[in-house]
Length: 311
Ligand code: APR
Image 1 (cartoon, protein in one colour):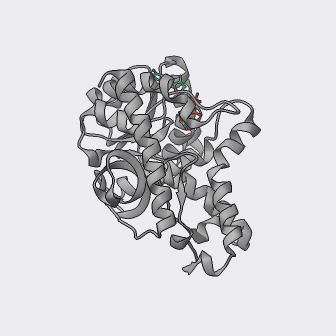
Image 2 (cartoon, rainbow, N blue to C red):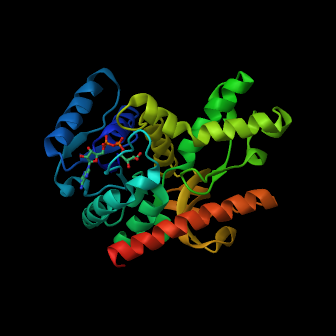
């Protein structure tokens, strides 16, 4: 069995560790600056497997050598949002954390695929790529699968079908400027535009976009972690089982969709070793304009990072 390394044993990281171990997708190494906490949670998860038929081994601690041999390293280390904060408000604090942990993780697991979860997602994914020196196919950020899960939930409720019946596509930044594409969304193969009026589709898109903030304000402290960890799990499964599935992820664009030099959410073919290619979509003028705005927003964040970190 292969190994998944997870840096950050907080809400998202530990829940992901549990999902990976319980499903026997891979062995798990959980690393956190809070060493005892990471060890404790790993032990707890490992002992829970007595009631499940999973042979996965789960280890935890503060030592990055635990990550050695990982096929994929997921980075969730950093600070989550507080009520009233946007994901962008986290940039300065989380950039320091990401720079440090990615360097150490890549030294320990130089052949791994890096999956970023820390927010603001697109900028942190760019930073991870820059620090790692990995080629672009081995670095991706998890955002679109989570945003889609939220859209699928609301669309499923509107239609009275389970969320798994809905397929959708969301591009752009993981934030207020994300671009939901109803034209590429369907229920049981039927385009959603044929099942729901335009105003209702717009409302569903807004709820998906604001879904994270809604949970932050309900929780009072911390941000969502069940759906985020499930969304990372979906990406891990596609890679570990070499599915070549088409899923949204934030990747470094080099001219695809007419965009260059930034990480941004796009549909990619995902399998063994990372993402293989971007699936380029035809957008109508309104969607194209929204995507350009989203790209400019990310570009601004990356420029600020370059200045602050003197890259
Ligand atoms: N090295 C290792 N671990 C670190 C470091 C560091 N330098 N700094 C922080 N951490 C760890 C914390 O000790 C904590 O256990 O990162 C973990 C973060 O966990 P939580 O605070 O529970 O946050 P979580 O909800 O898991 O979100 C993590 O994912 O969804 C995003 O916006 C979210 O950026 C946030 C990240």
